[in-house]
Length: 351
Image (cartoon, rainbow, N blue to C red; front, side):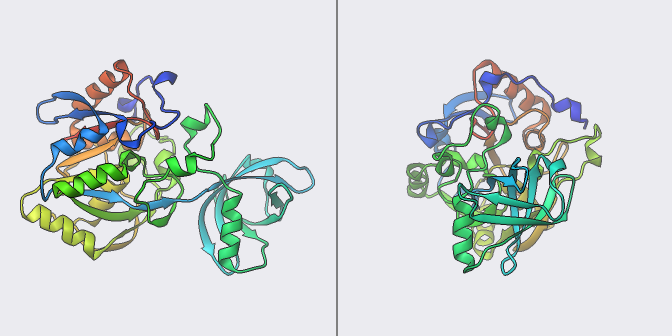
């Protein structure tokens, strides 16, 4: 398929700027992919589409306050630093993105905090915007991480930042309630709709919960610069699928129950870990799987994800699962009906 097939006009009023007051009361469209039938519900109604011994698969990756603002030595220029991952605990080395990148060269020092108490030195260039920083901090690693994170803010996505700055509440709102493993630089946002009450109701109904981990990277949001999607390469992301999740999912599938995958990152992990027999297997490593139509899914019977932005790889995955024509039609209806799109957007359940 071609990139241009995933282009549509998204009005500002359709972008989700703030989350709903209650997580599970976002709007949810239900698309029956075999018939094209569409229903309009609230997210908490998702439980009505599943039964005892069906299984939901979640991504339990945990977001950290990855966006910092510092000042360059001598000039005092304000620099945004986006933490990607820690490379070496002992040496305090981090892989980061910087903006504006043209101002930051090897050997430069950056100062963070009101009193410039945190200092970092640029020791390498990795990409056009990528740098390796060494933080100059004496003290235990846990103390360093606490001090570093205290300077950061929630890594809300660019479509939200276009309208407002990050707020203190975002660090809670931009985190799933079941987040467990730190490492994501942006939230697996489809999971933001699940409240403790909804998960408890699912448990009482007998619906299983399985957790995998895929640390979401910025590659999901990187612009695709080729028209032919077969030529696009996505960034690699670290993922883990452990024995317990395999047991839960495979038993449910073996017994003929439905599997619902929550979010594009979870789907990417599941489709990376699936074996030739259609069951998932344990996995620890990296994936750069890019799913777009046509694609044969082997595990999921249902898939829930937010309404996505134009030209995004997340939209392409939804089209692969629900059918291109059916999903694009659902998107046009969502625009007409005032659904919210993006990280704090409403949800599309495809069954």
